Length: 214
Image (cartoon, rainbow, N blue to C red; front, side, top):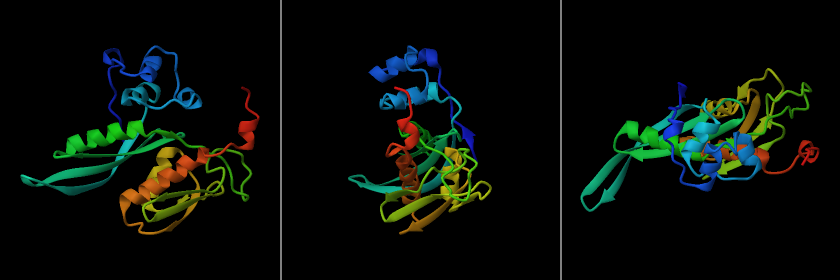
């Protein structure tokens, strides 16, 4: 179930990096401007300022154990998907003894991993020109899992696995097909492979980018 990402008090935020200072001073006013300048997200508060309407969903919770001198320590490991459902998506993980703290860490990690997703109408069966699907085929890998995302005509829906459907929904993609290889039952690798595929939508320059004014 989607939940709103908790917001911060901007007035109380004290940036610790150059990019953070540029954002708080207003010299960078949008997340698109940040990526156009090829600047890294160095503080999670940057995302709070530039993308205030983010939502997240907990996808996987499991208990992991660590062997120490004092014995075994059990902790929760949480995987979340985050996005604004309009071209920006992220995933994050967090570990802690308390589930609530683990979720907070996963949200913080996801904010640092926000990526833009290029959308389009890349299916030869559809010529609507609206950004409802992918502009072309993309492939993502993580561990043994390999995912191939394919553009689909408008109205097809997301013909993909349930976890991948959540990821694409948060990215703002409404129609897509997919093929998968490997151990897809490993939820984290499955999600990471899909995330890497979406990251690859901006891997090269398209004809539309050539026409941009500089």
